[in-house]
Image 1 (tube, rainbow, N blue to C red):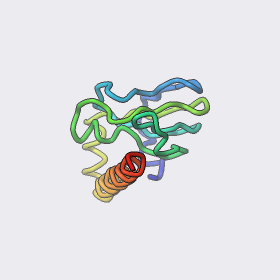
Image 2 (image 1 turned 90 degrees about the vertical axis):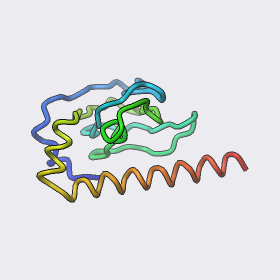
Image 3 (image 1 turned 135 degrees about the vertical axis):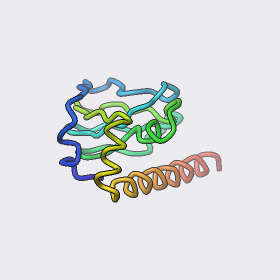
Image 4 (image 1 turned 30 degrees about the vertical axis):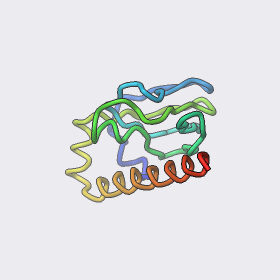
Length: 123
């Protein structure tokens, strides 16, 4: 989880009602989102792999490599996300180099956790 203050200058906020999707697996993605309020679930192949809370980042892979989302994000409660486009992402990486390392670690942790769940489900 990142300190939410790093995203305080982002003006694009997206409100999602409970039960609605921020995005779905397979949708094209080119933005990252930071959960400002509420809780949401990350779902891969109909399995909940993570619960997002205040400050959680999601969709980061779409900035690093635009393409289809590998997961769905569904709001458990009413949520507000801060949208981060590529220009803002690059600015954050330049101004706060540790930010890039945190995003890479997050991606690696999610990949490991998802692989572990999928291997366990196949067994």
